[in-house]
Image (cartoon, rainbow, N blue to C red; front, side, top):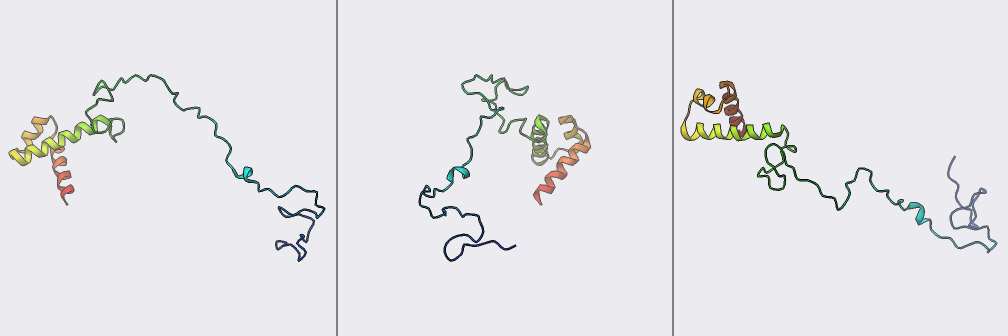
Length: 132
């Protein structure tokens, strides 16, 4: 059924009234937009929000005693793989540096860093892939 539109006299064709149209008696209140209907209701306070003016202990982690003075560029808990990935990345850089600067063999690198030969080969292969 098509939407009904006002007639030429300004009254609706059906018994419904359009917003702002009275029945012509003159005793109706002037039309006011319903802005309050479209306003968002006030938000309730979050239940899981942290309270203000509370002292939080900066206990750090097993890598550093204080989070606020930690030397890591990124928190171990924010890093994918955690502290192990951070330590592995540093170890891998040291392996690559020793290989490039000193020309150390894979066997010596494995013994020096306490890893298997296969781990040294993985580190070297990953470095080659990054260069490409």
